[in-house]
Image 1 (cartoon, rainbow, N blue to C red):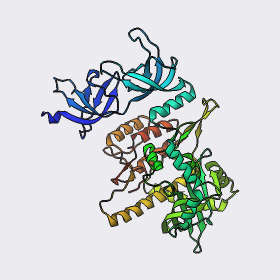
Image 2 (image 1 turned 180 degrees about the horizontal axis):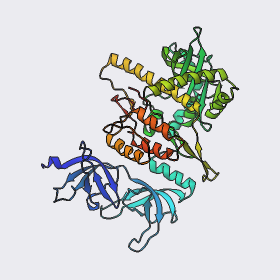
Image 3 (image 1 turned 90 degrees about the horizontal axis):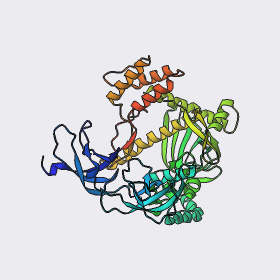
Image 4 (image 1 turned 60 degrees about the horizontal axis):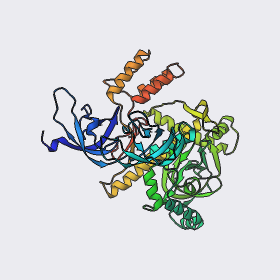
Length: 494
């Protein structure tokens, strides 16, 4: 083995009592990780991108190595509990929340935090990898175990910033001040369709604060139905490279915790200007389809629009109107449901998998403590929204792909893909299913959507239903984003 072949770069994982594991890039799936003992970690912590040197292998022992350089340090701020000095450890120290952080930083003498308080700290000095670093407390989060303290800790540990930087907040406030001028500018754009006269509404969870998608519907002169699927046109307010855009890139997504939302965009945008609120004109991106009574697309259009939401429904409100056949926009809801059922059944016949499991929700008291657990059943209105969103996403993807590739065959496009299940996992699942007394047809680790759906139907209402559904879901590949279109096994999309 040459010197060059013993040096590798990549992320470091630390487990147990400070033992490091390094996966050699592009190695086979069954290749063993390189073990890095604690004394060979240098100053590296879990998740750091490091350069390692692999030692010559000794006998039958696992391959070992050492960290020789830290290329990108992921952790220098920690959240944990203040622990008292004790025998062998004369200073107070931090017990990190993250069990993969193997160090126990010594807390600087001057601190306002009592023992058993949860705090955030930064390393101020670390002279030797064989000693613990010195840390300064940057924020006292509160008493460990209290709801608000633990929620703050979750946010800090996850890198989720509740507050926006001042320049970002100022930029959002400026947009709000100039909202009428910005909207008027959009109205003058001849390419933007004005469909404010078309019946439009949102259907969301009852506790939703922002409404980022809507449906519109009208009957055309030829008897066909025009259905519009709309999302907020955020790009008209947030421009590429501006302060808000850069912050949104850092955040990546809104984060939903049990009792709060950490938005990707300032609330002036997410809950107001870019929220499709009822009885307000809003800018949108729209996919508009002309459908016949068999939900077959006769015409389609994609572009920027101005819409006006006539009503904000919760899923339960809309479902109640459909169940009782009485209420606002009954005819429109009936037609949307009729068309969506056809779309859904067509998707199932094409091989889409049907996984239906109740969602567990918690009711919290004013102090944030859970007082009741309950299951939230899926209403058919949830499925209806899902059907139209899938229609829009699939067709928009095909449309943009054609446009992009007609101009530049090397252009990249991002797909939501779902690979076929791993054969080994399917074989393990089959053994488990058979042990519970059910048939599950597989062939050399391959399984069809038809076989999975048949099993889901058979176990419905049985004592084993949740066990089998959970095991089956876990045996599936994870859906992910990719520039390579390998299709979507679960949705039967190519």
